Amino acid sequence: MGCAGFTCSKNSLCALNILYVMVSLLMIGIAAWGKWFGLVSSFQVVGGVIAVGVFLFIVALVGLVGAMKHHQVLLFFYMIILFMVFVVQFSVSCACLAINKDQQEQLLEVGWNNTLSTQVDVEKTLNCCGFLHVDYNVTCPAACFPQHSCSSCADKIQEHAGEVLQFVGGIGLFFSFTEILGVWLTYRYRNQKDPRANPSAFL
Image (tube, rainbow, N blue to C red; front, side, top):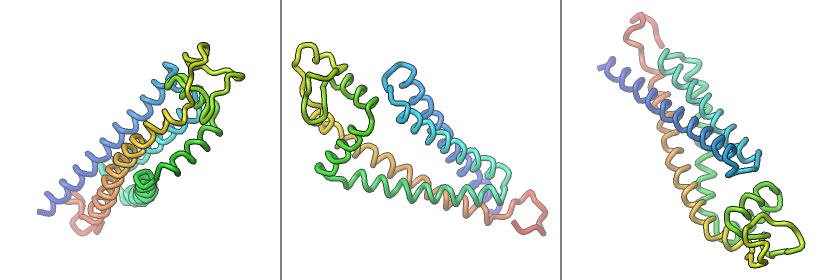
């Protein structure tokens, strides 16, 4: 029974960390693909997504090695880091789901004013110019600009912002529960005896 429980915990923890490795590689790949094909010109956005992907990859690797070797120190640090990630991600996910339309608009305007390269991406993708008002005295990469037939970007962004926040919040909430599952599995696995080890050794 002890062996079955130990093996089950080990396999579950390995499977969870393999999932995290795949998600992290997917994040890095999508960010690099977006930059390579010119879909996203903002280096900060691409760099941020890649940094999160690399961080998740390292954490998953620590968890995977710790699970395979039943390494107490690695499993302890993995459990602490995963719990901290859970707290942050759960808080951000709840904030995304709870944010109202006025708060969305304020956050979008702050983001718009602080990232010039992202403005260019949005104007080009959504075929709009400016955030609240269209100014034809400045350049704009949108296809509608030469014909002076552009609308402002605020309304177009607002159409998608609510759906995106709901989606991001939902995905974040789902992954935060997998993280708390990982913390519980790690805690349980750490306190189990390895049946292959010396029976007199307490792990």
